[in-house]
Length: 321
Image: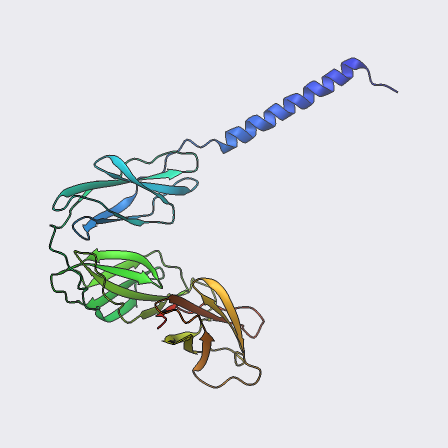
């Protein structure tokens, strides 16, 4: 039996109205007109005659900050993703003051107000300098709550002068302080996580020193979280065509017989002891290409007695010979 035409038209009209209402509701829900807060804690420090290092604290938004823009004298010079809170501005004129501001933006394109303006004066141009500073000594790290750490070190030496110290986590630079400083505060760390830090000195010609010895820290777990299960005391030693790793297993109810090794952030191999693993520190030698000068950053995690993978160790970086 066919439905009356009037009833069919009425049904179609109702469905169309519902569709329009749904679309309108979705559009209203997706609409975002609130701007992020302005970034705070902006600092600028000259690293050489032509570079300035700019850093800031993460901005907030009612949804999420998706990126930052850095401005010099009001003109945008860098666009950066949300996870990046520092950058080097290069190609600057020597012995000149440069003023910087930072703005945050969200997925809808809303721009925050300008941050407070900061000014840094680039260093005077000098004669060609190819001699790097000595490496910083006696690096120490102490916890400052669950999500921060304080680094201290003895100053490096240079034939001209040290203009900056760069802090590295693994093989990534995460912080920079002026060459007159011998301490740095790192914020935004994750609770219950193993970290390894090194420091390099830098001069006005951008020559960098060798890495300091690493300093490790495992941050305090969040309330109610299980203790960290990472292998500790990891060391890495390079030989021709090989890297030897040595570490202390985590404390578990039964000996750990299996580890997962990652190189440069990617899975490399599984290390398995067929019999009872040796007590105390254990070692493993990995074959690598014989090309000299290649950097590898290694991390390990253990398979726990319940079959799950534990926490990653602090990373270790090694250069092939």
